[in-house]
Structures are given as structure tokens and as C-alpha cells.
Image (cartoon, rainbow, N blue to C red):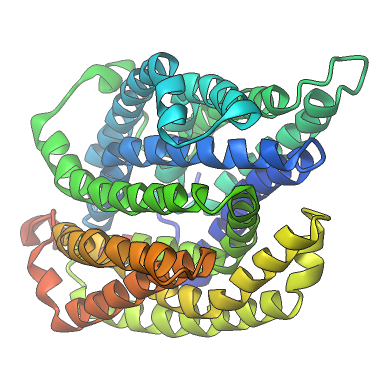
Length: 458
């Protein structure tokens, strides 16, 4: 086992990129296969998935905070404490996941009715959310374990597990949605069961892998030892991080609510456009995650100047590659949309949203890099404050104005989101440049100066 693995941005980013791509392929596989059932099925899963995403972000209170804490402890050379925090993370995520599963079982139908759904779309959304939401604790465990594995410097190994999960998911999708191998065609229920089975399998494999890569062995008592100091540090980062992310997706749910008033064509077009757009910002997500791991280790090792320069170098790559990918997607937007639907009205509207993505995705790339970097340095509260101002106070009213007053339709939603991304991106740019984050480290200078800390920071 390698316990002092040298880390670099490329070594971290490319497997994280592929892992995120595989997760996106799972979502797109559902959408693509369900489009063979009906556009209503696509809309139903799209609405239900909003609540699944919010649940995962709530779970992020723990694992997002733990990733930063573990990274800084590794950078400071305190590996025994890092392994104990890893065990605590798994337990806390599992408990949070079970609580959310119970809530979904109890509240699925009221949630879907509140989203203005009717008829078959409502029935399918309720069924999908009841199954996937009821087993959301599998995803909670996966998030904890994959984050630990990446933070320890093994993103490639996490990517291979995701590859296996993706293969299982696609095969089961085909079998369960369309009724292959003599089984009944389950449609939306088949997609939900496929998701649950593939996630459960991946959780077991991730757990085995954690024991292979954590150099200080985790004991059973570590899973049930709740150390106050560790929990306070996890929540210090995790709570504002989750609030910022839940706030973002809650606003997206409001925008989804706006779209329900525009009709089934707009609702389906939104889902197809979001599925395609998700591939545009994949590199920024991966680069932001890899940069955050490096920033956490560098800050933990007391190398703040290196952390400062690392982020600016990453920012240049994020912007350049995001623009390049977006231009390619815009050029091929009509063939891409044709993969999902034959409806000319839906195809035309989806293609229009893809053209507007050049405005949205460039601003989003800044946030996907700078917000994780600030979080990894310990400065997690600042993005939340400005998230409230930009997302809630500016973007939502702006979206209402564009959609319902100026009658801009779905384009109004896209432009309102873009305004928020650019506003927050510019604010985070100046925050990092101010270097106010340098006094937010979770690991003190004495720990950071221990022998070997700088080397482990990579």
C-alpha cells in the first residue's frame, strides 16, 4: 500500500472527471431509456430527481465537511486522526441516510402533488421517488466512502467502482424497463429498481476498498466513537456547505415549478437540456474537486501561498476547457437532442436552451472551482451569505419577471440562473484574491509544522 502518494491536479482530476461522467451516464441512461416509454415518464423522473438531489445534498452536511477535515489532517501529517474521522463519517452518513429514507416513504405523494403534477406524470413520479428515495441510504454510504477514497489520493480506484456500478445499472435498466429475459416491463419502476440495486452493490465494494487504502486501520469502535472535536470541525464546514448547496437546488426546484406552468413541452425540454448541459460542466466539477483536495492538504501543511497560486492555475483551465466543450455541444445540439426525442416542438426548444448555455456555463465554471477551494481552506460560510443574496433575493424574482411578466418562457429560467452564476462567480473571485480565507484553517500551525506534513500535501 502507498501511504505517501504524490498528488497533482491532473492525477486527481481525470479519474474524478471519468467518475462524474459515469454518474451522469446513469442519469442519462434513465432519461434515454425512459424516453422510449413516454415523455411523461421523463418528466416524472426529472421532477422526482430534484428531491433526490436535495436529499443527497442534505447528507453532504457530513461528508462534504469530513472531506475537508480529513484532507487538512492528512496534510498536517496526523493520519491516525484522519482514519478515525473517516470511520465517523461513514456512521453519520448512514444514520442521516436512514432518516431521509423514512421521510421519503412517508411524504412522497404530498411532495409530488405540491409540484403541480397530474395524471400519469404524478403516478410515475410518486412511484419512482418512493422506491429510490426509500433506499437513499445506499447513496449516503457511497458518498461517504468515495469521498474518503478520493481524499486519500485514490480517485482512480473510486472511478473503477463507479464504472462497475454504471454497467450494472444500464444492464438492469434494459432488463427491468423493457422486460427482457422473460421479466415484465416495469417502465419507471424498473428504472428505480435498477438504481437501487446498482447503488447497493457499489456501497459494498466501496466499503471493501476503503479498508484497502486507509493506511491506519479502522477498528469497529471507531465507527461508534463520536469525538466532539471531530464532529465540530465536520459541521463547521459541512453545515454551511450543505446550506449553500441545498439553497441552490431548492431554487432550481422553484424554477422547475415555474416550468410546470409552461406545459409538458417546456417541462420535457428542460429535462433534456439539463441532461445535455450536465456534460458541459463535468470538467469544472472534476477540476474543482481535485483542486479542493490539494488546497485542503496545502492549507493543512501551512503552504498557503502554494494554495493561492494553485487555484488561479486551475481557474484558467476551467474556463478554457468549459468554453471549448460548450461550443462543441452547441454545434452538435440538434443531433444530441435527437437522441432523446422525436417531438419537433420539444427538440426545437431544447436546442434553443443549449445555445443559451454559453452564457450559463462560463459563469457556473467559476463557482464550481472557487466555492470548493474556499470550503477546503476552511472558509465555508462566505459562499452561503452571498448565495442567499444572489440566488434567493436576485435570481428567483428575476426568473419570475422573465417567465411570467416578460413572457420569455423557458429561456427566462436559463437567463435568471446565468445571472446568479455570474454574480456569485465574480464575488468568489474577489474573495479568493483578498486572501481572507488564510486565517480559516481547521488544523493549527503547530500540527501543520510536523515532519512530513509538507510532503504529504503533494
